[in-house]
Every structure is written in C-alpha cells, then in structure tokens.
Image 1 (tube, rainbow, N blue to C red):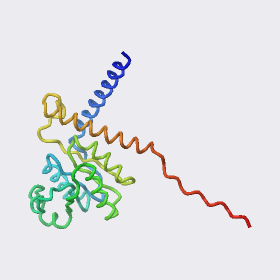
Image 2 (cartoon, rainbow, N blue to C red; image 1 turned 90 degrees about the vertical axis):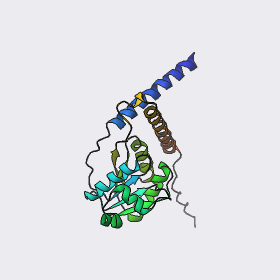
Image 3 (cartoon, rainbow, N blue to C red; image 1 turned 180 degrees about the horizontal axis):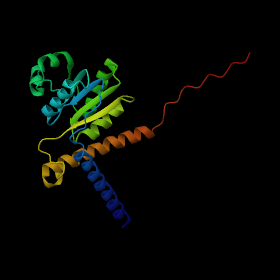
Image 4 (cartoon, helix red, strand yellow; image 1 turned 30 degrees about the vertical axis):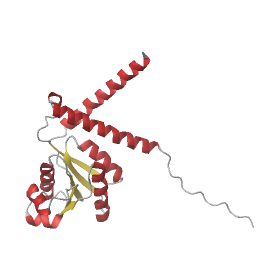
Length: 208
C-alpha cells in the first residue's frame, strides 16, 4: 500500500512538472527582443530553416557580429544553408560559421563552447525551437560557465503549444522533451553534489 502511494505521489509530481514545462514553452514565444551580444548560435533540428532564419534576422539587426549554425548535416553544403536562411550573400560570407560536429544537444553545447572560447566571447544569443530551449539552455549553461546566455526561442511549425495534448504528435513531443530535460537536470544535480577537487595542501615546513 505504501509503495502504491509513493508511486502515485511520484506520478503526480511528474505530471505537475510536465504541465509547468509545457506552460513555459507556451509562453516563450514570441521571443522578446534580445540585448546585443558577442555572438549568436542557431541549433539545428526539426524546423532548422526557421531557427536559422531567425538567427540571420538577429544578425541583420546588429544583435551580434557573428553567428554559428551548430549541428549541420555533413551532406549539406554551405550554399544549402544560405538558401535555407535567406541571408544576403555578403552577410553570410563574412559572418556565418557552420559547425558539422554536433549530433545532439550535448554535442551542440560542446561545439558552441569551442567556438565561443576560440573567439573569446562573453555573451551569446541562443536560437532554437521553443520546446527545445529549456534543455538547450541547461546544456549550454553547463558547457559555458560564466558566459551570459540569452534565449531566443522560435515557435515550432505544427505544434500548438497551448493545446499540445490534443494530438498524439504534440503529446509525444512534449513528454519526450520534458523527460530529456529531467535527465539533464538530474545529471547536473548529481554533478553539483559530487566531490569537489581540493587544492593541494601546502607542504609542511622542514625543520633545520
């Protein structure tokens, strides 16, 4: 009986968290006007054309001097990405970098971290899908401690964030993303509670 009660409590907590997560996604778009930053990163995935185009618009508006598109498929050419982004040739040639190493959100964070450190940036605008933004910000925050991150979520085509539970695809997407978010949150909590590296102690003075 006690075990059943614990399971029910855990299920209620999980469901409440899912609703809070979905509400966060629902209210994240339209995105607010971000402050000027050193760089912009657009994370590829479902709806990549919308994400990349949104990043290009920020670049055109002078919100940063340079942009990284992270997680580009190796079979996609630079010309293909320019066509997707609808960017002006001059701006695209001078100020857009493509990253081909990332295969998932963790990879996006590592690829972006390398780009940020190489350019010695202190601030970044993150562009990705609305449902993906919470997990992306967790991963990027972990990979880039001390870097100021601004979220610029893009509404997902085909997803009604207000009534996501009304379609199987919407329910599947939100539940899956929430579960992945919880996994990353749990990982960061465990790492944060782990043993800290201690500075080596000073050697004891030798007697004469």
